Length: 183
Image (cartoon, rainbow, N blue to C red; front, side):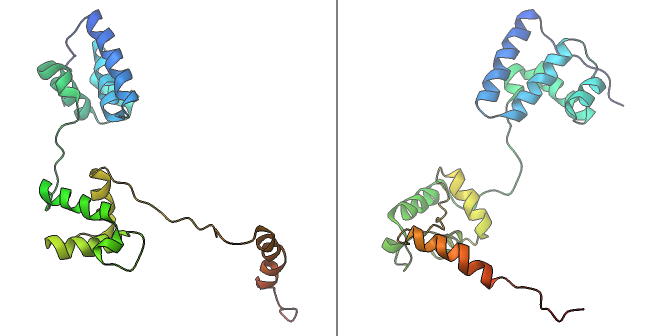
């Protein structure tokens, strides 16, 4: 069992932490805000197990937050480096990929007007010799500051009156109806 530890600080520390929590929420960093809330509760002398129950996290996690706060103050609460497989594309490669995406698929020699993650996965394999799953390509693009564009399903040149007529009269006739001979 972990010993009870409490965060170090005073009333001024609490005020600063409340401001930091507001900034974290504004910056869309909920995990940082949660850590700050845990430290605030510890400053109010709540035990680690109580904080863990209130915030619905493991006791060891709260204990770690408090130790990080006591050792490094605000820096200890920020998002640290997350473990994972290192990227196979260098920063130079990612910049070249951004340039390829910005130039468009037609300029690259494809017969389509939009990039798909499948197309981009093939381009990355061809240009850089790295094979990525199409789902990971979307994450890679988002990390590079690019967004996924999805085509709309609206028919631009269609006549609205004909569309309504088709939806109202044709679609119901296309739907399967139970046959009269079924028992």
